[in-house]
Length: 132
Length: 155
Image (tube, rainbow over all chains, first blue to last red; front, side, top):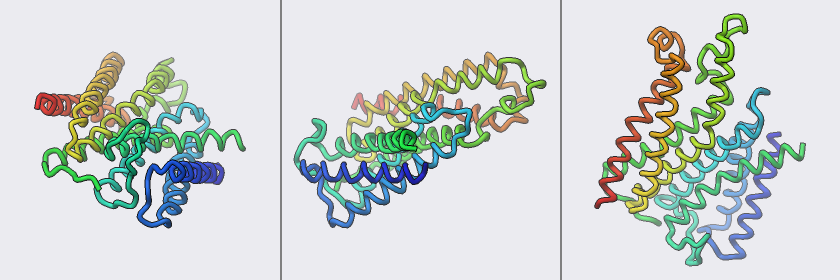
C-alpha cells in the first residue's frame, strides 16, 4: 500500500509540474528544486507519510472513506505550511503574473494551492486502494 | 517574497491559529491510529458496558472529521493571511472561529447529556480528560479569535 501511495503521489507531482510549466504558473529558482518537490513533498510526505501512514495504520473498524477528510486536512495543513514557508522565507519558487484559479495576488495563490495539496494524499490513497 | 506583518500580537495569533488546525488534525490521526483519545468505555468488555453507549459515541464522533477539517483549514488559512498582515485574515478567522464554537458546543452538549464531565469519570479516563481540554480550548480560542477578528474587520 505504501509503495502504491508514493508512486501515485509522484505521478501527480510530475503531472502538476508539467501542467504548471506548460501554463507558466510558477518558476523555480533552480530546476533541481522541482525534482525535490516531486520526490520529497509529493512522494515522501504526501504519498508516504500522510496517505500511506493513515491508510496503512487504520484498523479494520474504520473504512478508508472515514479517514479521507483527515487525510485531506493533513495534506492541506502541510501544504499551507509549505506554501507559507516558501512565500515568507524560502523563495524557492515564485508565482508568475498569470492568474491561477482566477486569483492574482501571490498570497491568495499560496492559500489556494496550500489547501489543494490536500487532494494529493486523498487521491493517492484512493488510487492505491483500487490498484491493489 | 511576501513581506510578513511586524505586529508581534498578529504573529503570535497566526501561529496559534495554525497550531489549532494542526492539533485538530493530530486529534483525528490519533483517533484513527490509536486509542489515546477514546474514552475507556469504548474498549471495555461487552459485559461491563452500558449497552449502546460505545456505538452512540462512535456514531457521534464519525460525523466530525469533515467538519473539523473545514474548521481547521479555515483557521490555518486565517493564520497565513494574518502572518502576511492581509485583511482577508478577518474573513477566514471569523468563519473558522464560528465553526470552532459550533463544533465545541455540539461536543459539550453531547458530553453533558451523557455524564462525561463527572469528576470521577474525568479523573480516571485519559480520553475524556482530552475531550474536556479540547472543549475548553474550542470555546476560549473561538471567542478570542472571533472578538479579535471582529475588531480587525471594524478597522
